[in-house]
Every structure is written in C-alpha cells, then in structure tokens.
Image (cartoon, helix red, strand yellow):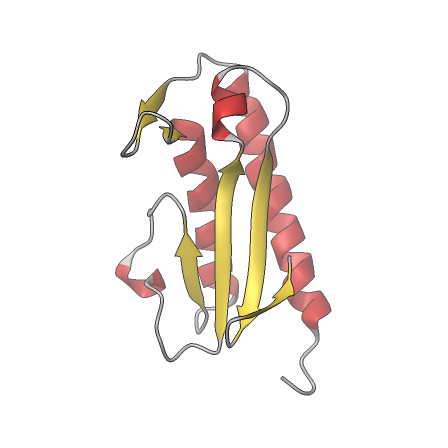
Length: 122
C-alpha cells in the first residue's frame, strides 16, 4: 500500500455518500414502504436499493479493479467481490433502515474501504 493516497478514496466515498444521502432524504418525503429481507427484523426499502445503486455504481466507475461488498445486493457481475482484489469496499447504503422506515431522522450512508481485509478508509 506504500505510495497510495487514501485521500482520493476518502473523497470519492464522501462524494458518493452525499449523493446517496440526498436520494434518501428525497425518498423520505414520500411514503416509505419497507419489506422483509429474510426475518421480520431485517427491513429493506426502495430507498436502500436506490442509495446502493448510487454508491456501488460510483465506486465501480471510479475504481473498476476494486471489489464491492454491498448489503442489499444490487451488484452486477462486474462488482462481485473477487478473492484476488487487493481493495474491497464495504457499503451499507442505509444504516438505520428501521429508523428510516418509521420516520425517525437517525440513519446514515456507511462506506468503508479495506486493503487486504484491513480497514483503511471509512
């Protein structure tokens, strides 16, 4: 990792989190419909998926050689995590879905980057 400017990665993560956050706020103005993604306690909304598409699409466009591990699974085959990738982005597009679904203003877009499994940006 010598010689790598982590600020470039952090700046792109910040830019994408702000874009996804704007989308979450826009969707929060409409009726939020949540569905279960396995158990009754695990919710997912259209806002989760929209935010994930913004973040994952942006990350893959900026860093096509990186792997992406995203919570809601909107990845194309291009973004499927590779065991050979040195860099892996970890994305929770709507951390706090239950709060979001119930109209509580406590939620976030979470993006992190790991290098060989070690977190370096978040």
